[in-house]
Length: 168
View 1 (cartoon, rainbow, N blue to C red):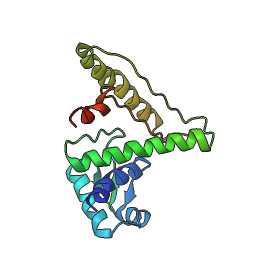
View 2 (tube, rainbow, N blue to C red; view 1 turned 90 degrees about the vertical axis):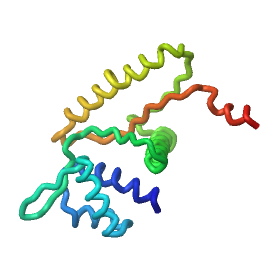
View 3 (tube, one colour; view 1 turned 30 degrees about the vertical axis):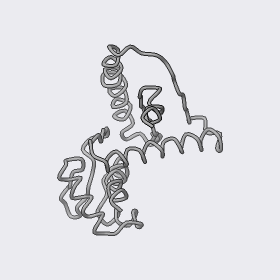
């Protein structure tokens, strides 16, 4: 249950990318969740300023910007991130192997890197990849042909899977 509730905030944010929605519409769309859980998640999102509450004849919710990096260093956030990553992998596999989706793309790169170059790798992500993705998202606003994509970027030492075996 905690894992499911933690992922709820991500689902709500993702829904609001398309446009502002009322709480009632969000509850209707997420019918597999309890209404109280959705209200709590909306409250957390507003408190964290990840979602804005817009007062009017009918209260609506919207995302203040299109780009999000939801990094948090706790176990529930890590599990949610893992679930999101695995969902991206499933979508790529289904698109490439089962639906012949021309826009599904997957590449795995294995290379060697010096320890002193790791900060440059992070800089590449921060200054080039992330900034370019923010630009793409901004350009897509209001474009009826814009589509959502799942993109995952990750790296780790290539021999990390063997570390646990060394301690046995």
